Length: 186
Image (cartoon, rainbow, N blue to C red):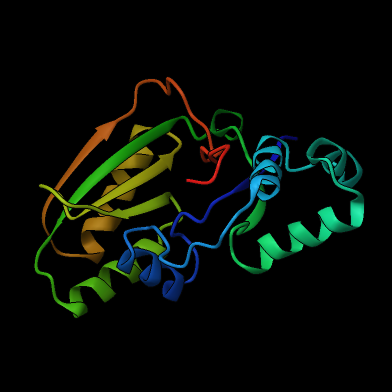
């Protein structure tokens, strides 16, 4: 099993999604990370199952100071969760779609309805509020085309949209969950 750390993607509780949407998915409260903190983050993103002893050795600390730094990174929200990354094809989820939606209006009532509807559809694995022609971009993972059609029907029945368009992924060319943590303070 490949276990790694992921950053928050907005699929948590509704208040977290709202806070994420209000900041464009980027938190304003960045904490100061030194060279060792950044090395810890790079190591944990590469292997979330790494032992504390090995992590401490790789970043040049003893175990206790290393553990305290990991705890601080978790408590400050830099490390948001530890998860198992699952290969979609191994669990019969062979189709990924990107759904662009334009809001019918921009009222808080519409947004509340949209937030509730997207939270209730487990096929949606990411929701992004965007600038441009579409207001939101949804990443959807389903079994096949008929499953996508069923998902689409549930989505448009739950929320009134001005426009909805979908792009079906043919092949995932590259993918990573690791953020590009800079080597030096920037």
